[in-house]
Image 1 (cartoon, rainbow over the protein chains, first blue to last red):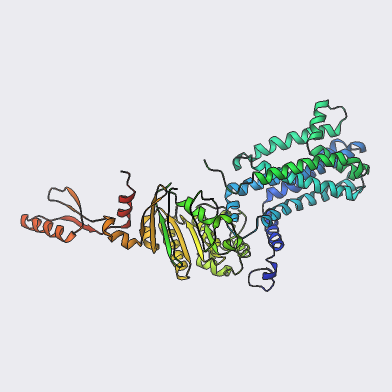
Image 2 (cartoon, rainbow over the protein chains, first blue to last red; image 1 turned 45 degrees about the vertical axis):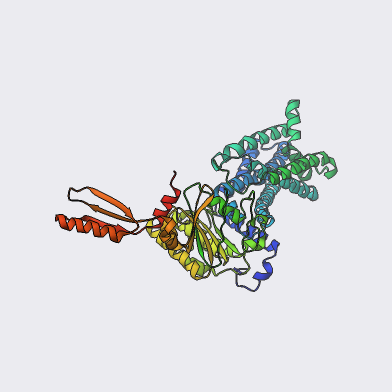
Length: 261
Length: 266
């Protein structure tokens, strides 16, 4: 490795950003070595797209809504779900505690961890956008800046909520139950409210107050309608509020160690 | 914790000894910066560990009682990554050899045995070339051979000039490795000193143990501070009666005797 100890470049790379980069690279390598994680990250959204596409084949207006919905779900699964899993696993296995004892800045470590999740989000969004263009006939996104703004906002919000939610999960064995108890209802309510205008009022209210449907609305504006960022400021505000709440909770409750007893 | 007053000298292997729940790990975790003390003064290499300064963490190596690692990483990769945290790390190959992991260098950690993972713990703590190492029960759960191997490594650490703070509940381990030990119980230091002194010190109260089987096959055991006198009496009596002292043995006091006496619930 070029930056290995003993090489002349090593001294310069001990900048905090250098540590973040090295941590990021390690996380990437570990990610690819875990086939099930790679599967859930890349094959699952494609399967959802294909299944949805097969059911809705021919109805362009339906496909127009399916693709941004899957994109929104991808943001949630690569950040909220993946980080909740990851943080619980690292905490319960004692990796976090070990890392706590070495001279690595907390920011560098968590930065590397988050960058890993963000890379997966970016790859998934790219897959969904490509599939939308090549397979589902919705063309290239109409508003790239809006797409970027909403993906970034969604990532920050969902990642923070994922780390925050990890605090509520008592042990690794129950992670799947906890995560799905949140992920599935949120996806269901949001998809349902986004897809139909005939949803009961309270379902609509719940979906609008949660961060996923606003994210999907924003992505719909960016990828399909091209209505512009100005038309989705309310949605951005909801995501932003959840984001602030998530960051506060994530930092406040962060524990490096397995709880005893 | 009620009051532990210990000073570990540079370059020594110091053993913290006590039953489970005696406060060993709590003490060590305060020194490592994992826990905050409620009172008292703590100085580690001139730093207050509670401040968690990165400068201090560059100079210490920690082997936790249980610490996990990525399941897909190999020892070589883990050591190369860990080395990057430190200003002047040791070479990866050298550390692999020191910790006896050369043959497993490229095996994913999930395929390593418990003993090999423990050696990886030691290797990761060592790779930054720290001045001071904390080893919290480094051999618990080892088979006898693995323990001897770990002892060998700790001796090598001392030869490298490292200061080592070791906790253990194995008496023979403390006796074999530590230059000085502190026996703690209920958060208090009961005795402190080199193992040899603790054993021979008059207040240590450990005595020689003399055991034998008499003519009727009954087993006797007697403790004495003067085995010469006792043996003289015993053998004289036996010879006079034309009996033998089957299984006669004289046991020198061990750290275990001192320990059991000190930590016994009264």
